Amino acid sequence: MLRRALPARPEARRILIGTLLSAVGRGLTLPFLFIYLTDVRGLTDNQAGLVIGWFGAVTLVLSPLGGTLIDRFGARRVVLPGLLVEAVGTASLALVHSVGTAFAVSTLIAVGGSVLWSGQTTILASLTGDGERQRVFGLQFALLNLGIGIGGLISGAIVDVARPVTFQAIYLLDALSYLTPGLILLTLPHVGHRLAQAREAGAGRATGGYLTVLRDRPFRRLVLFGLVLTTCGYAQIEVGFTAYSVRVVEVTPRVVAWALACNTVMIVLSQLLVIRRMEGRSRTGALAAVGAVFATAWLVLGAAGVIGTGNALLAALGVVACSAIFGFGETMLSPVMPALTNALATDELRGRYNAMSSMIFGISGIIGPVTAGPLIGAAHGRLWVAVVVGGCLTASALALSLRRLLTPAQDGRLTADLVAREPAAVSV
Image (cartoon, rainbow, N blue to C red; front, side, top):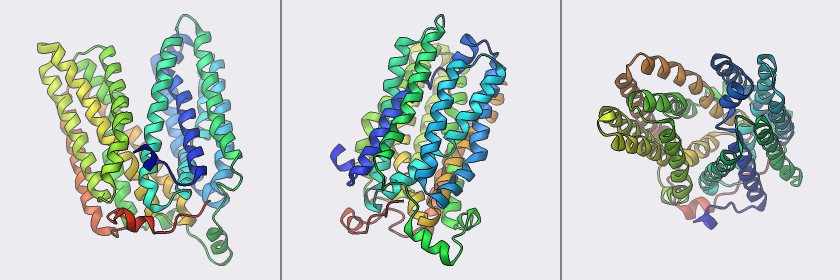
């Protein structure tokens, strides 16, 4: 399964190696930013929350600009500086000593990060054909989670609040990890340039912009699906899932940590099997299934809340099961969403399509916590469960309504042999 999931072009395989290595660095620091800012650098909880929220807001605002720059100059000229800025910003976290410096460093990291997801997705899409993109994006997601898991295990054994130097060390290592995909890209001089078709089109006619992307009715429907699903899904993990588990189910933070670890294990172990089973099947059907799986996960968590302290072991198992089920849904979403986005995109506007797709997570990341916190904080946990379950099922309905707007090729309903005969995408 791994051999079949690997992209045909060696350049794409090297890009995936960079993804894995940089993910290890990301895993070193991902769980600890809030703890570092508060327990090591002395910021209050509110100040640390504002710093982290500011990062998300700046990333969201700058993402459209990143898509425009990618289409105009090529992903290479955008991603390489972005990786460098991200590395400098991450290393600078080791030197944060006040609220002002924390905001400044957060801004720097957001500037670099705002172009990376759309740029790297555009490069990977350009190196793969329609017949293999879905498998490759699924493999990328599995490698990303594997790297984050490895990094988390390493940092968990290293960091110590009583020794600030341990946090400084992991931020410096994370910064070095961002240079890895950049060095790999530098060894691929023909990868990441602007499409020849885009240059020719630019000489004779306008290639369009975000208004052109928004006029794409199928893509608009896909964006709406993504906003609803991620608001009631991904965006709830950091706040809704954790708050409900601790305050309503009344499990310990250690159980929450086990649940998130189980989520990563589920993704790594099942991703290759899932992408194999999804070949030749409807992408919109898979997206509808994701909504149903996410809804099931939240129902299991809701049941754990009903059990509560009446059976602490069963309630804890419910929390862990919710996270595992959610991870299984992620294995279906991760290959299909970017594959469908790039199936709808034109070469001239591929950067903008991917930028808008990445903005979905930024927008939902703001809406989700704002809705979950007040509901659970006001003891309306059951209402929160009903809202997120209803939202996930609504997303499933939106996915099913998208199918009639797509061609069989866009929906992934061609046989593997027929897709394999289609020409591969040209490198950007």
